[in-house]
Image 1 (cartoon, one colour):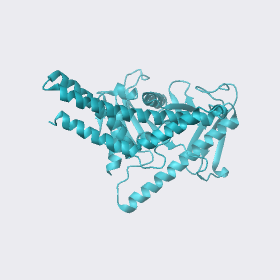
Image 2 (cartoon, helix red, strand yellow; image 1 turned 45 degrees about the vertical axis):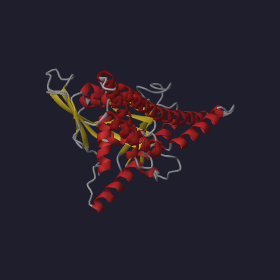
Image 3 (cartoon, one colour; image 1 turned 180 degrees about the vertical axis):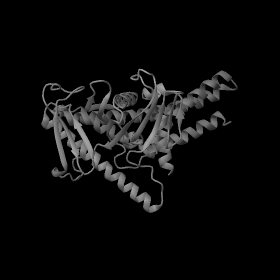
Image 4 (cartoon, helix red, strand yellow; image 1 turned 135 degrees about the vertical axis):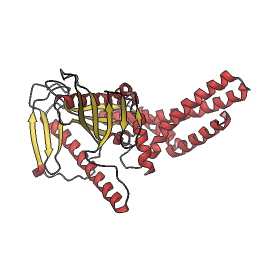
Length: 363
């Protein structure tokens, strides 16, 4: 068993590597600069820019404070060990504190696994129900809720782009913008097909059903990024919005659905005030989806040329959620599994995400 003092030294070493990775001094300087900008009288003249600056300031301040707190807690633990002198109860307290520090360090170390240009940015998350009618639509709604809860746990912002409910139950699709540091990098672990096995609440004979829903994740890309979209390749439909939306929901045919004919990608937006605004947002989502599709294809080609195994596959099944005859969630890529199905469906996804990111980094 590792001696407590040696464990503190090891954790201090890991923390020092993180401080160098994030460049704490640079973060402090950025925090000071952003703080000065926010104190100017004209700061809120551009609300959108002000909102982004405030969010960045909160993230930078939060990271600096977290790393400083970890440093202080390790220092306190070292001092307590010097006072312990065989005090079993105090040693247990220090051990528990080191467990908590290590868990927080591991969470921060995940950031070192990201190397993609867009990993640190925001994400566009889309959930689509698979074949199977109301069963699949109910499962898609459960997944949408799971990701909402995951965002809440991480204090990530979540904005609804479209949320298409079915008249009977569940949803046909939902698209969100997820805003937070490394949102795309983290959620990229969730792309693929998710499978649910359960006793159907919609089956009067209480038979077991298998349902599928797909999750697509794309980075929020800057307007400066060139993505060619030919208007001739688009099929644009308008319809009356339903469910979560703006003040025009159920009043006008303001919702927009765009189908990109060459790829079959379908995007929708119903949450803006006008048809024009919904079309504009839908086109942003389409550009992001097309950009991500091309990026994945390039990664597959590079992997094929180098003889590496690529785990990126359109429509690939990644995870099974079994509610009957036993309870288990298992990731088919990493082999990681848990019997805590309720916690997972309530947004406790980090173990699955981290396991996948570690696997990807090792490959």
